[in-house]
Length: 285
Image (cartoon, rainbow, N blue to C red):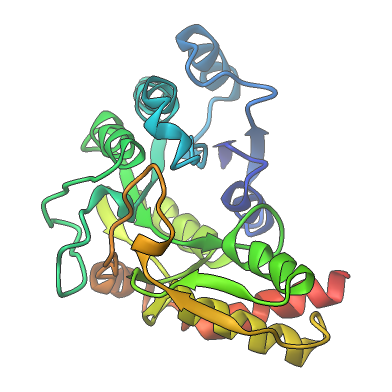
């Protein structure tokens, strides 16, 4: 089985490579080796690789910067998705695309089902929704949220740094969602891709948290593992106390029941996966 991974140096791309099934022949590209907004380059690459599966783990993820650079975000999050999907289709490959909870407006009072009507509040959300539509009905689209991993830039690693450097940290407490451990998301994508599943699905860890809840747990686990010498006060704040250019959904819990049925059960709870990540960081120093 030949597999092309785009965005291979990111958290999810690394996870996809690390969890690849035995016998998978993987070709990985990132921004330094493939311009996914260049149709000729994309067509040539996919044709040369001849993949059975194309994973798109690339994205413009600078949420606030996208407010002033929506065209740049659209090029990566939508136009490039269409190019990759078309090239995959023309070569008989199954296309797998990763999207986001930001396609929703956060006004719901129950977890968003995959068939819920999107209503993005930000440029980032709009471009990711456009990317879903560009992927096509024959693609597998998996929406996720709050992705973290032992390497790369993410909320967990940012909190560890701030807690080590500052006498206190302030964290938003009125945005509710669910973290997602990138290595487990990668395994789920492999399982679905090998079955050539199509359609839109949701995947995150199990459970619910605010960013404040997540930060408190990060500190508790890090102190217990010896990554932090002492605990510092964590101050809960409102979204209005930390204004940003992009509007975030205040409630973005995703309904994962459909994907759980396909995978044979729910994902581990986010606290369990957080502990796994902290242990991995402690082991690697």
